[in-house]
Structures are given as structure tokens and as C-alpha cells.
Amino acid sequence: MKNHADLRIFTGTANRPLALEVCRYLGVTLGAANVRPFKDNEPYARLEDNVRGRDVVLIQPTNATPKSSWDNAGELFMLARAARDASASSVIAVIPYLLGTRMDRKDTSRVAVTSKLMIDLAATAGVDRLVFLDLHAAQEQSFPGPGVRCDHLYVRPVFLGEIRNRGLPMLSVASADIGGGKIINSYSKRLDAPLIIVHKAREGDTLTSSGVLGDPKGRHCFIVEDESATGSSLIKAAEALIERGALSVRVVVTHAKLIGDAVKRLDECAALTEILVTDTIYLHRPEELPEKFKVCTVAKLLALAIRAIRGDEDSISALFEEDSYLAMCGSLNA
Image (cartoon, rainbow, N blue to C red):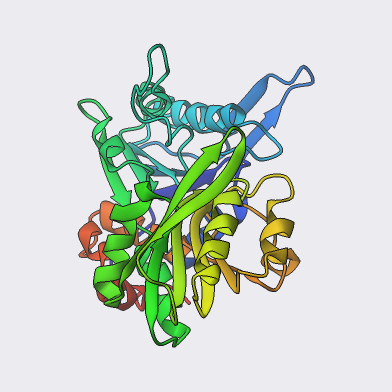
């Protein structure tokens, strides 16, 4: 395993607990960074540790926290510029959640392709490698220009282990809308479980589930979702599956924004047995969440990716599959 003496990991304020967990698995100390606003709310960022000639990794999701998405993105860009100007050997931005990932194309006139803008801004700030988790659209990994490399990781190996640990027979994998078909297909192949797609429709501002493709009767269903904000789609899909005879419905969500009263609504949904989420977005302390929720950390996945990027013997592509991911986890610090 490569020595990490020349590695420095920093984070902003968006998800410090995740960065600390990544450092723990790698056996390094989280770097000191002074990230704060002035009295007039203008941002300030300074790296307190020497980074000259070292590989710098910045771990920072760009979702809204108590701060806005753009505030958290700004912290990332300022830290990247500080590292580049301080003669870092390389600047790697690990962005567990990318602002604008659902705005990946011009589907109407005069609309901003926000994910492309974010990637361009990161490159301008001095980032030369980007690491993402479960992008909404796979083509976004091709957005970086010349000189900027990109790695797109999948949370699938983490969730597959959790699903198998439930020991449930008669499994089906479901999507809350037609757009999620490709994602659930990758789970279906590895679990040898049939697919179910819930057709989502809107009547004005009201969300409805107007049909189910596939038969959930007598089956335990796992709804797979890359992102959830209000939880409405998950609730409607779960209710539709139960109405059609599903024995139980659980959901796995990579990026759990869960704004407003979403946690309460999901917890009170009788159709849902369990909600599995990751810590790409800092939601709550796990012990503060309702019993129906379980937080599955992506810290091991990110630690292994950082190790592979820095030239260890491991391959990034090995992290795509459950068996090799689990084997590699054994080499991390406990």
C-alpha cells in the first residue's frame, strides 16, 4: 500500500463527518482549514497545513445545508484555488453530491446546464481530477475539458451488501419512475431479481402513480433511487406496490436531501418498511433518525477510490463490483 505521508485531505463545512470517516479508514489526519464568513458574510478560506508538492484531496458535497448550494460549492472552489496557489502537486475534488446533476442537458430553450458549469468552475479553480458518486446522468462524467480527469463511482456495491443481508426471498427491484430503468437493471442482474417500474405522472402540482410495469404480488420490493428531496415519489411508488400485493417495500437512496418534513412523512408511510440512505449528504446523526432509517456510509468506498487514484495496486473499476469491493475493504483501517 502506498505511503500517505504526502497526502493531505481537507473539507469545507458541508459534510465534515464524512471526511473524518474517510481519513480514519486511510489512517491519516484531516487537514486543518479555516473556512468561515467575514462579518459581512463574504467567504474566507485558508489551508492551515503545508501542501507544497503534496497530493491534496478536497471532500465536499455541494448540496444545500443550512448554507446554500452555491456557498458550499464556493468553499470547494476556494479551497481548490488555495491548494493550487500553494503549489500542491495535484488537487483532487471528491464531490459526493454534485450541484445541478439533474440539469445535465438543454431540454428546453435558454436553460443552464448547471452540472457542466460546476465542472468548468472546478477546473478553473485548479482541480485536475474529479470524483463523483451516482451522477443522475452518466454522460456528465464526460463534461470535464482537457487536463481534468474524472472518476464516476457507484454506491451499488454498498447497497447490494445491505440488500443481501436482509435475507429476504422473492426479491424484486423497483424504480419510482420510468427514468430509473437503467439503474435498477444493474441491481436486477446482480441480485437475479425481476424489475418493476412505477409510472409516475403529475396532475398540476399533484404527484400520482398511474401504473406499475411488472408484478409485485407476493414479493419483497426494493425501490432504488439516486436522489430524493421531498420523498413524495418514493411514498407514491411504495403505496402503488403494496396495493398490487407486494409483501414489503424498502427503499435505497444515494443522495437523501429529504427537505422539509420528508423524514417524518417517510417514517409515517405505512407502505414503507425501511429506508436506507447514504451519508453523501449530511442528514442527521444516525441516532437522531427514526428507527425506520439506516445510514450506510460511503466512506470506505471513497477511501478506496482515493487510494487507487494515488497509484496503489487497486483499480477504480474494481470498486464497481460487490465482491472486489468487499475484498478491498478488508485492507482498510478498522
